[in-house]
Image (tube, rainbow, N blue to C red; front, side):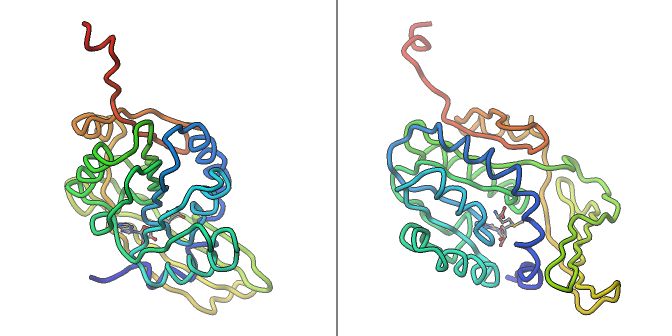
Length: 251
Ligand SMILES: C[S@@+](CC[C@H](N)C(=O)[O-])C[C@H]1O[C@@H](n2cnc3c(N)ncnc32)[C@H](O)[C@@H]1O
C-alpha cells in the first residue's frame, strides 16, 4: 500500500508544531484526570511523536505504545524518542496501523489525534468497538475532529509557514470531494530561499469526514459516550464507556 507520508515526512513535524501548541495542554488536561490504573497509553498514528511527548509528561511512569504505519514518519518518531532517556525507556514504537496492532491488557487511554479522518467508516467503527471492549474501567479514547465535516471543496490555503536558519518552509492545503463521506486533501510543501523555491513535494491524503453528532451516534452504538474537552475550536472529543450505575439498574 502506498504511503503519502513518505513524501511529506520531511515537513510534517515542523508544520504540525503550531497546531500542537493549544492541543498539548488540552490533551495533558484530559489525561491527567483519567483514573484507569497503570496500564499503557496507545498513541495511534503517532506521527513524529509530539503526542507521545505530551503523554509521557502528563502521565509519569505509564508505558506508551506508539503505533505508526509510515516508515518515514517512524524515522522522525524514533529520533525524538531516542534523543530523550525517559522516552527511550517508556515508549515502544510499533510499525503497524489501527487495525493491525494489538493493544496491551488494561489500556489506560488511546490517543488518536489528527488521525481519525484516515480511517474509512468500517475501520472507525471497529476502533470504537475495540475501545469499548479493551479500555480499562475509567479509560478514555481521545480524538479530534476538524472541518470540513461533509465532503466539500476547500480552497487552497497556506496552512503553515516556518523559518529555520536561512530557509522558509511553507505548506499549502486544498481539498476536493472524492466520495459520499470522503474528501482528498492535496498538500504542497515548499522550501524557499528569499522567495525562490529550492525544493518541494506534493502529497494526497484520503480523508473520511463526519459530523460530531454522527460520530457520537456511532460511538453510542459501540457503548461509548462522547464529550467535548478543551477549547471547542480544537474539536477535541473524549469517548468513555457508558456507565451502568446501580441507580440505572433500579429504574
Ligand atoms: C496528520 S499525521 C498526525 C500525526 C500525529 N498524531 C500528530 O498529531 O502529530 C497522521 C498520521 O496518521 C498515520 N496513519 C495513517 N493511517 C493510519 C492508520 N490506518 N492507522 C494508524 N495511523 C495511521 C500517518 O502515517 C500519520 O503519521
